[in-house]
Length: 172
Length: 104
Image (cartoon, rainbow over all chains, first blue to last red):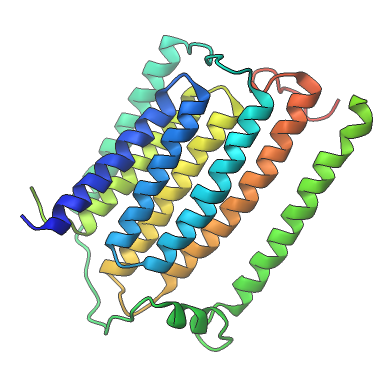
């Protein structure tokens, strides 16, 4: 067995085990830390697939941005050391049953389906290639979605400020 | 043990998606529900990248979709956390059962 195979299965196990722990643990801070390791596992899978740029974006945006934001909001809204209330057993059982049935259905569909690879010349996903495609306005370029996303980010930024501002006079 | 390929990556993606859905069903705290949504979005990203690598290596569309999904997920998380903190200020709780009204 090759080393790459072993690394792949280790990363897969890290991602899935930490994901399961993140949605089942009753301590919210631990849930955030397990989410962090799950996201790092996914970044490792991107590295395994030779998409270094996406892996770097994943680590910078998710691990460095979103998880830190979540941890800060936990500090702001949660009493230290307090566990989440226990869920009803019936709700847990029915959710697990529904999720398992849907998972089995999706896996059945996956293994009955055959994918056909296209015989194209592989384009290396280097940063130079990505930059050229992202700012190109020709066929297959992504300049318009890039601009739309920048407008969306600006709107989200202003929206956050407005939401955070409005409640201040009411609380004081 | 099988050689890892497209099917193994899709298995991870599907499993992660349904882990996130399970968390969304069972959790009643808004922050943990947001974490479950992040897991779902990550499984979608993994799907895009796997298809791009194994089925269309000559194109980069899956890669760009992943970049845009990550950007939109970051915006979504920031807005959601602003709403959650605002809700905590007015209700002293971030349980979905207590957040029944949109305006007060």
